Image (tube, rainbow, N blue to C red):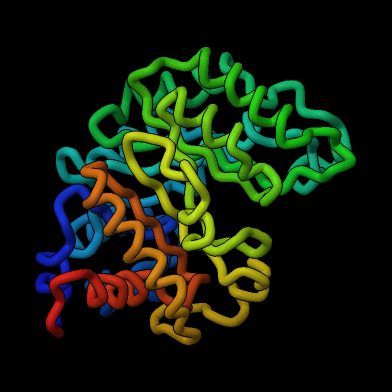
Length: 303
């Protein structure tokens, strides 16, 4: 089936996309022009948004630094009206203890801006409202694994989230992705539900599968669903990069992951809420191909 035929069978309100778009290896699959790895990001985004299976995109670079209004306006000029993006929030807001990767001098020090509403609103929320309002989908707060020695247990983490989201504008769309399995408690889900914040169903190295997360009581917490199919559990990011580049074909099919994504589509349809389902190249080897394979599995398909 062609991408157009597959896209026609995706339910309204369900938006598939990929984690970032800057992959020249997708030439002939998503892109018709040849791009270099650097310097063509916005032109690639324009072609990306025209691909029939893509109805959203994950902006991952915003995790390392918040995009300026100039950058956001540049992206907006290359997107069709109403095309929503799922943006990772600057890690200055979500890192509890500095690892020292970007700033070695801060290694091991507590981050004073951890879950700071003021930093998020000034550095992230305000620029998006000013320059990217037509394309702002959910903001994803990605919390990388927090070590036990840092002293943040499941209860305190949920309490900190409660305080943080109480200070944010209600009109924003927010989602939380955790990398600590022990944080998936009834209290965590209750806090997110109270504030209309989505739990991000993530497939990652040391997390339960997306399906196992979906089976947890009350795990659909927001008025929309967000999923990020990143890695097969047990595999590191670096291993996947080495194994799968240049991301032009599926090298390691993951039927369980595909079925889990279909289940999320079904849940979105049953509950009549939107879904943003992002797939990373490192999940199977090629995110566009994975999305196509999931689309083939959707209910009502005959081929």
